[in-house]
Image (cartoon, rainbow, N blue to C red; front, side, top):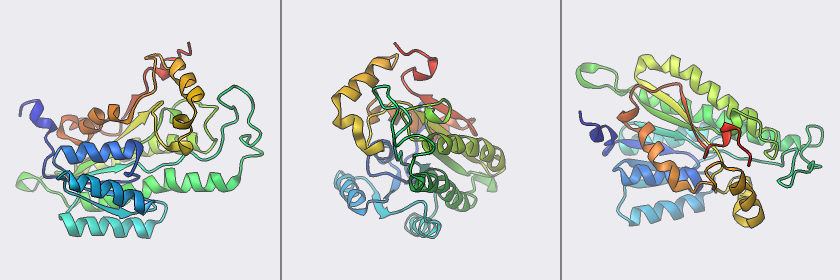
Length: 280
């Protein structure tokens, strides 16, 4: 098989959680443009319908559904509906995530009064864990149940590809990020490592993308709204800029496709060099 042919995923089916904006929407657009039949899910049904209708109007095979990934029964129902519509599942992006609450430092370098371990709202901790970590577990669990049915030539394992959105904040400390975000993303990364081993027997690959500073709606989209904060982030990224979500699309295609058929249990950092330790 030629190198470029290994990126061909046309005709397969996929689910993306948190797919109505930001990085999740970039995943949906990547898959749709590659000829994949996609279920776009999001906790906000109006946003899911808007983006689904747009992509469908552009000629792509996209359906959409409301999904709160912290709700296991709802997750199972959405996956069952995808299975009924498309007859199985080949690719899943466990992307839904939130960054709730302030970190212990403000972007300006001062202590945040509501971001300390003893002042942080415990309800924000519970919700972040429910979405970022339990939600990833629920998504992976439902994906595996469908992917284990996939067989290849002569009855061999064809499996599938699961891609989790983690963060470089799961690998290093980020003091301006709310305290629950870092351990939940670290948990996703370790779950990916553990499941890479467990699922290899079934031909199911699972990998993670660990983005750094991307312009998204996470944390209320404050970077989009605050040009001073945006300039501050641009200044500390070694490549000189925060990333736009389109820049994650080639990596998403790599991990979804057979071009990454010898990768599992791994993570790929895409952060403009932030983890190199350069802070201007």
